[in-house]
Image (cartoon, rainbow, N blue to C red; front, side, top):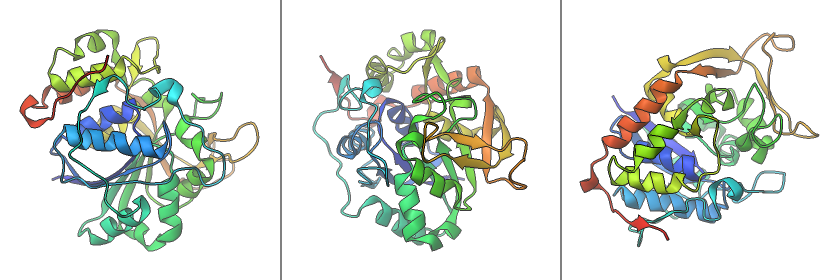
Length: 314
């Protein structure tokens, strides 16, 4: 049985890795891709989403442009990590896909209401679009089965000492999301920094097929890395949906700090000292080697005959 998905994203190189699997795996019924300002501006994230729907010949997948800035705080991108374009290193050629006329929040609403089954909402960028959906169309929450997010951390940040990038980019939106009553699964830095492509895997990726070559070209420009390889943060949302048994999970109440030096922190009430209930299913650990092997397998299953191959950028 396929999973009906709305995928909210800000491509971004690890977003591109996630979209490569999302758009080619028959387990996912992709109803809509929406974009948001995050890793780079929304104009660039939208263009990058179109590059990938074009590359994988998914003209059937709707792409809607979303929020160009956070709800309250000024916007600052992560071009230092993802490059000025967000996806440098590969020329995708002339595009065969384009955005739909509706803005992201309206497109989300229409997609949710038109669905005969509950939607799985996946968010791997700043949560601005999701917060706006909650505020403008609160009745839609009843038709969302779950919200799976890449964001937050219980163990420290990657943008500040306490804040993860997606939450830090729009903490006010994140607070709305965590307090919405949605069934939320949080895949934060506690696990995504263990979900890496190892140095050996990165060295062989370009030999697998044309998609491996494309991703390898992007990864060459990806400035995020750990001691063992490059983390595939956003891909965790899809790995979790297909293999939840590979994660150690715990239900925790999560609060979001929206001002002061700890802005963007996701504070987990692990001791249940201030809340007697929980609002988030939080990932605490992952089988990292299994993730690495699975990612390579997913890329290897992508048929070169089904793509619009481009070329490496000089």
